[in-house]
Amino acid sequence: MAKKRIMASYGFGKFIAEFLTGAFGSIVFMFYETEVGLAAGYAALATIIYSLWNALNDPIIGYVTNKGAPFSKKLGRRFPWIIIGLVLSSLTFFLIFAVPLHWNAKENPIPVFLWMVLTICLYDGAYSLWEVNYQSVYPDKFRDQKERTSTAAIGTGIGVLGIAAGFIIPPLVFSYGDRQSYMVCALVIAGIGMGGTVLVSYGVFETKDMVARFARQQQENEAPSFFLQMKQALEDRNLLAFVLFLFLYQSGTMCMTSSINYVVKYVLEKESSQATPIFAGMLIGALVSIVLWTQVAKRLKNNQKMLIICALFMTVFAIPLTFVQGQLAFIITMALWGLGFGGFWTFMGPAMADVVDNLVVQQQRRDDGVILGIRAFFMRFSYASQAIVFFVVHTLTKFDPDAITPLARFGIRAHMGVIPAAFFLTGALLFAKMNRLTPEMVTKNHMALEQMDI
Image (tube, rainbow, N blue to C red; front, side):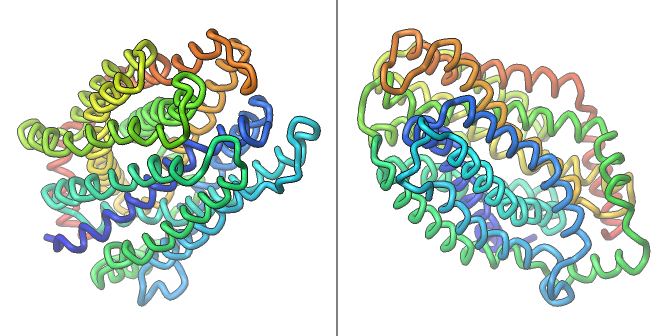
């Protein structure tokens, strides 16, 4: 069994992923719409283009990097890409907020629109480079079910700190109405990302056995073509069920967390720093949930069923967020919602590893780069769904940052509560209907993998 310090170091990858994702999701759309003045339609279109770029970017990066890396005979096929991608992610994140201050998006939106498209696509390419390979390390490095559960639990605890940092730190650095403060905030985020790169390096370093297995696989048989791997992966019912569930979960989460700064600024009419207690409520709930759901999982022994239970829990407590009044009510409700969020987040990794194992056994090869690329695409396509939801709601409610009406406030409340709840419920029902992976199949796959040694 892997040592706890290796698990903890690996968990810092979750810290970085959630830190960058939280910061990106909670402030980028709002920054361009309300601070730079880019119309919601342009911001939504930029995000959709970014998502289409994702459709090509993630699986291709997974396929190409699966073939090897610089110095792969010594460092493995994943480690170099993870470190390179992490450094580039931190640097490109800053560029997103470095829109020239003299550009006026209301008078001339095209330059701002193009800047947004270019920078978020550059950032996504760098992010995919490290994150796809980071996720691919997990099922290969942590092979025992107990080992995976322990790694996931430790990673969730550390990852929640990343969520905390991604949601809580930015509002403490930037100020509503001050564009330059967002650039300072982006520099702080980039610095934290670079520091996290050092901490995660030990946990993602590939063992001699991992390097040897890859070398042996390369010698024994040639990797299938990219399109054949895509076809095989997308024909797998369990993988398709899982990634659709992730897409709907992430869409709901993105809508909710991206709404918090809108709620603080336009519904509660408070300063940016007052978003921190609301995010903190969610994170306290998530931390408490780790112990709770881990105990439930030990009895249930079914990662897929745990995801469904947690998604239903999130559904129940998302709905009240459209109707509660006052900051304290938002904090309490977000803490309750965080209980489900923390559970889903804890078992997302082990459930994905079960799906990957099933495909590896079927295909007799560990070509999981494309699989994880498909997962990454569906996860980040949620940015497009969030942008579309905001565009439609803001258009229907005639949202104007300079003149907020009661109808516009209700629209903000809707994309904070009932709309995310619809995403969570749809995902749970769809996954329950489509998934065919049982605990018995998972155990059988583990036994097969031990014999195959791949």
